[in-house]
Image 1: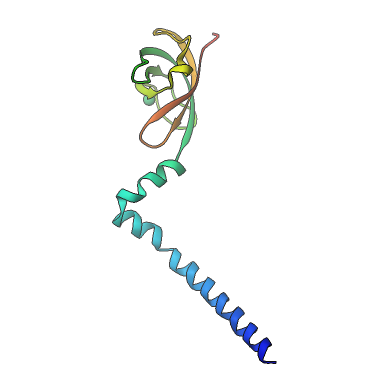
Image 2: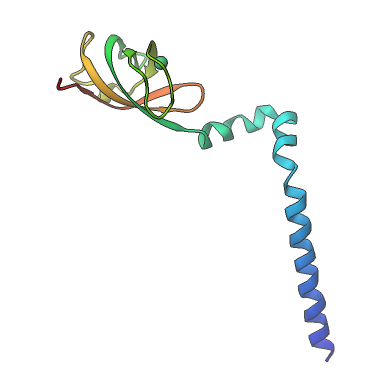
Length: 124
Ligand SMILES: [Cu+2]
C-alpha cells in the first residue's frame, strides 16, 4: 500500500516537472539570443544553412585563398537575384574551371558566407 502511494506521488511529481520544464523553455531562446549573442551566433549559422543552385560565369579564381568569383544568375533556393560575388571553394572542387567558363554550380549559404559545393562547366 505504501509503495503504491510512493510510486503515484513520484509519477505525478515527474509529470509536474515535465510540465514546468516545457513552460520554462518557451521564453528562453529569445532571451538568450538577445543577451548572449556572442555565444549563440554559431548556432543559427549551422541550423540556417541553405542550399542554392544557379548558372554563372567565372570572373575570378584565387586558389591560394580558396575563393571563386561568379557573375551568377538568380539563385534557386535562396531567392537571390543575379549578381557578381565571391564564394569560398576548395581548390579540388575548382580543378578544370577557368576564368571565363560558363558554369552550373551549387552553394551552401550559412547566412553570411557562401561555399561552392559543386561546380561544373555548363553544357549549353
Ligand atoms: Cu550573389
